[in-house]
Length: 150
Image (cartoon, rainbow, N blue to C red; front, side, top):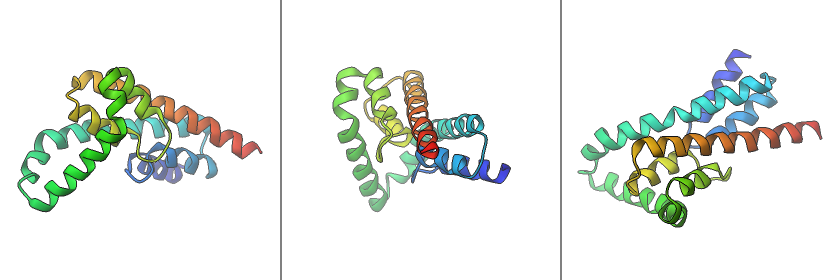
């Protein structure tokens, strides 16, 4: 069970699935339903400080490289296009809504990038991401539990 919980946490921290994959993985592998929710949420939330550290320190250094800059602009444009209308118009609440959608391309990675690109206060961006992640986790958790009962 501990190994399954750790694997779920790694999935929750991964940009390839986030908690949208971590929670179902944990539940389908017999992890306690509440532990699956809590630990997947916390693991997904840990991404935000790492992303901000990356924006502050590493990003400035790597932007000197052509291929990195090209990839960063591509990712930035996608995050801005996905979250742009909501975050530009509604700010904090728009970022919550964007991160809360449990679909591919939304989540803490895109939410962190969008908050950074739109110049939201770091504290507000953290709270918006945290609330959005919690809503997303609850939706995925409830949907997975419902699917398991069917």
